Image (tube, rainbow, N blue to C red; front, side):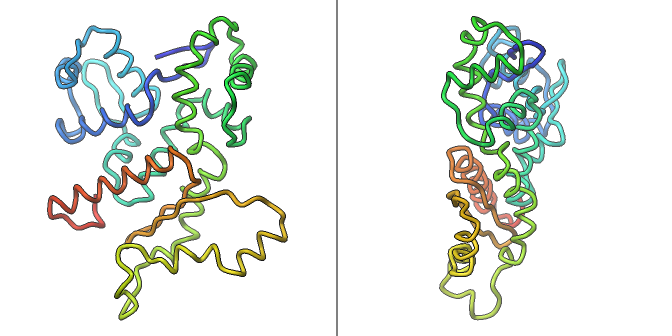
Length: 253
């Protein structure tokens, strides 16, 4: 766990913290003692590395407790989602737990910064000294840039409101129209590229941000094209693959 001024930030990325959360969920039913978890991770429960990982999980809001580590509600939603949308929604909520990152994302408006600008923004927000910021900047930048797409305006809209707007497209085709389309309903995914959408975009003169859209029988994911967005989609696909391998219904995680 790091600190700049009055702002705490996680030393470990959201993805790395969620990987530990998934182990707690799958191997220990969501609750485990500190010593047992350290042993499972092949670390010392008194070591600084293990303490930093636990601190990061607490700051992200994935887990709580000290002697016994328990997954939080948002942590459980992120590692064991019921629908594809819930994965993205839970990750957005976890990223929003770090007030420093939320404020940085608000000022940057979703645009990844260079390191010099990021350092100046951190100094303005936290009031920390420049030497302290420069020393911590590599870790802060790496962890923050991973979740920036989740905190940007377009990313959060696609997770929540946009998902509900796309509900009609999320419904699986019926009857004979299902044959030949496979897992993804390609016509639905191409709706945004239709002439009427193109015309609407041109009248507003707003640049169109590339997006990744995946349609499932029980929902739809629409996220800005980025590494973090791909991580979300990969996680959803891994969960569904594991579920199918266990013989469970694909619509249930």
